[in-house]
Length: 192
Image (cartoon, rainbow, N blue to C red; front, side, top):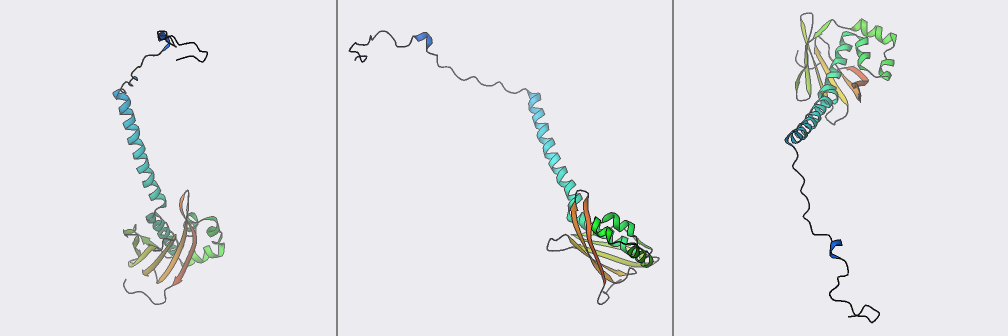
């Protein structure tokens, strides 16, 4: 064997001194984390999960179907009582602008001295028992089955025989009324 200049290599002499060749070492293992750090990580994970559950519940309370129906029921109750200020408080700016002084006066003149109990839900449908004096009435409201942000309602008994729709939209405050339509029923419904 030659080095390219016709000189033989010295078999005994290494090309690199042995002191410069690093020894093979096992990689160091990381020391286990202290137990308090593991506990801290576990608490952080639990806090994140609890925060997610709370956020989902908060969002459902604010923007869920039941809250949408509750807002529509409150609007219908305000309309039945002739309380334009309560209806305006639930409405967006466009709907509030439709509550002109003439509309407010008309609502106040036709309003009933009705008392309502809190709604009872069966699925997404809300039923509200009401009374005008000693005469009973009911208000039934249900969201649109197609998933639109619309709630339809009917009133019966002492509250009259009308139906209506409430259009709603999501805002950061929750649901706001963007449209409200009331019309007499073609034929009075059966029941109280």
